[in-house]
Image 1 (cartoon, rainbow, N blue to C red):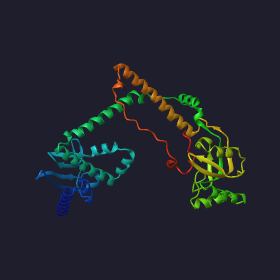
Image 2: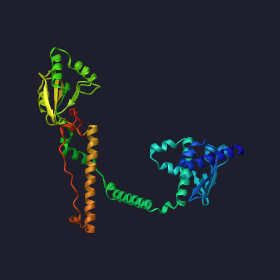
Image 3: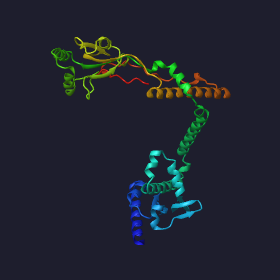
Image 4: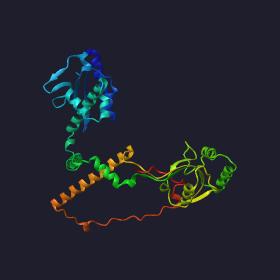
Length: 375
């Protein structure tokens, strides 16, 4: 057994030394080595043209998964699962490891639930301690750039904590509050009048006239849409390659200015009616040629508060609105308490960039597809 351990230690020593020469991280080197009950390595580091012995590490594994290698060592501060020499003896305990794991996000915790996962985390923890000790030896804990970032992060945590105390912890709404918000904003939860079409939209007028002639001869519009989709000719409403020709339900407010002739014809048509002729629309300088059949229609609909999506939206928006009220009130109190004065006239004027109107070339060639209304 000792011979095997000695061979393994020699292998680790060579790997780490080569790693340092090549500029590869310590973690990579250790992870490439096979697991063993005992890990001991000497790392030689060259700094300012002199060789300095940096560390002698011995990781003594005593987690239950290694019981076959000996009894676990229980110290005053817990069960020691790893130890190493670096400016004195340092230890990692099972209790420390389990506490760290418990503070991870749940999806991360699941990676370290079994024996293999716990062993992996133990090694990562030991490596992290080694790197941290090396950083301290290099006096990085006194580095001004690092200290500035630490201070900034400390301030950020303090602001978050006091904001949670003064705002978030005081945020409390009742069912009546949610219903009241819904009643005051019912218009946000109205599904507008909608139609569903079998539609073909093309960019070339001559091609559109050819296609319309096929429709007049009795060829099914969806069959033609499939053929045009296969050739990549469809654009705009009905151009979805998975369902060529089907616009799904569309509403007037989902289309840009310039499409009114198409929308008026679509909403005025009877269900099952194929529109006579090709409708030409102009959107930001780009002409589109559209032909369609009206398949379905549904009236404007007031969504009730009880609908799951509506309720979620109401709760989210009501709480966001209330939180903003609490925040504004709290900030106002702070300003009044400290008698804040601002001197806007002392702020220099910035250079304003002149906005340019988008050219026709900058506009998308396809008519925008209807977006889902925000709820």
